[in-house]
Amino acid sequence: MNWARILTIMIKELRQVSRDPATLGMLLVVPIFLILMFGFAINLDTKHIKLAALDRDTTASSREFLQSFLHSEYFDLKKVLDDERQIDRLLDTGEVLVALVIPKEFGRNVANGEQTEIQAIVDGSNSTTAATAIGYVQTVAADYSQRAFVRSLQRAGVGEMRTTIDFEPRVLFNPELRSANFLIPGLIVLILMMTAVLSTTLSIVREKERGTMEQIAVSPVRPLELILGKTVPYLVISLVAGATILATSRLLFGVTVKGSWFDLSIVTLIFLVGCLGFGVLLSTLSDSQQVAFLLSSLLTLLPTFILSGFVFPFRNMPVVIQAFSYILPGRYYLAALRAIMVKGVGLSAFTDQVTGLLIFATVTGGLSVLRLRRQGR
Image 1 (cartoon, one colour):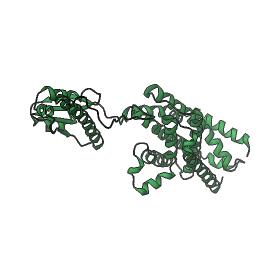
Image 2: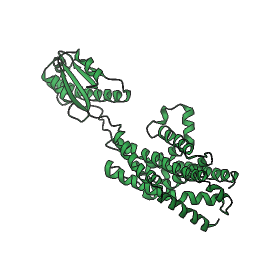
Image 3: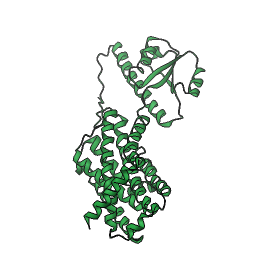
Image 4: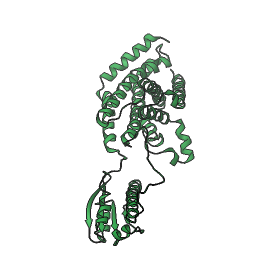
């Protein structure tokens, strides 16, 4: 291996990138744009649910029950109704998501410790949001029911009541349950893979379109030297883009790295090496930049978004799809990234993911060298 030839190719590639504002913008500006767009647009936190209430009892107890929904940021009371026929119109137009109906004699039943039914009518057009809203309603109702039951027993002279089960949940790693801490690592995986693969693929295909690939073919440059010379500049640029994404995530979304920066750097480096090798492999299958762009986008964007665990959990996927996801590097990198950024654990907790990334990088690198040799390199 001749390092002088590799350095020459690297310098040539860096000059090419500096003279191509579109490529440089794609590598440095587009990742920031994507993290801003996805970070602000995608939010799994269901808060400020629009609530309408029909209080047929209008007693102090019914008003207290209704106020219990408004003591948190999960519900916003938008309408106080006086007719049940208004509910359908509000749900049809999307003005409210939940309509709460408090029956007559609610206060009397609560005071006597008798069972009373509360109706919650929920817009189910978005099943995820509807399920979350139902869970919130059940939690608030159960809490109020327990407090009302204790008060009724105290009025009956039972005295101080103590529950036999004291439920105190403790949430580790993400105590505020912020969706940003879950989504930002997935966005980093998506952006880095897309930019790394796409930039490398277009770089080599561009040589084919301009006819300079034939000149390289008759030169002493070996396939491995060509791959290193072509990919190392984009590896450095991708690392800079990754650092910029992390800085933007901390500044705008408050997402920090709880674990070791060294572990994060090692895992990211292995992941990018595999992505760059995959980009070189795709370039051997394309003869034009249009085909290269389409192929790179199709094989990186959709699989990473859908099958890496970014948004959709693996347990909900068919077994065949789950098996297919094991060949995707995004699956391993995302698991390692969340372990480092969110949990703050060490390398020993995600050795399987690192092994998967090393296998992917080795396979893609080896196949790239073989493909280039078969094509005359």
